Figure 1 (cartoon, rainbow, N blue to C red):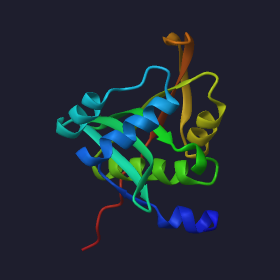
Figure 2 (cartoon, rainbow, N blue to C red; figure 1 turned 180 degrees about the vertical axis):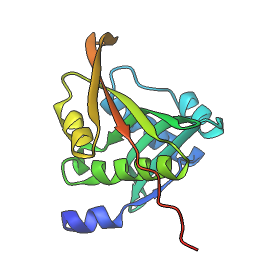
Figure 3 (cartoon, rainbow, N blue to C red; figure 1 turned 120 degrees about the vertical axis):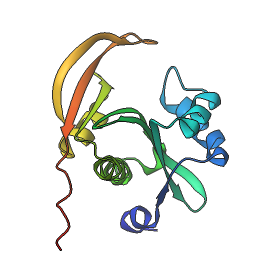
Length: 161
């Protein structure tokens, strides 16, 4: 399957209980302090939390969790299986997050990213996020600064009558 076919074949939907073991596995491979299965269960049940998983041939290949309160969103976790990185899966997932935020009335998305995570920073910049500030010693294991990024979302155009 070509990279284009892979990207076009991914189905995006909300996280379900059945996805949690796969998301936790991906979480453990990508983060030094991974979220627990209970954390993801809470995401599903929480009215202010949102989630998106990318499914390819029945396998979770990407996910994102984020909070939405009124017109503000904070992207908490975002990961793509190593096999599907750098081919556009992350960009497509990020666009799904942005579209869901836009249709939910969000005007601004914030996120933190490790200072050393240049690939993620490039993905966010490529999709319109701008650097806001540094948060010293935000991350632990290892201790590292976080760069805060922001995206101002243009609301959808009003429907014509």
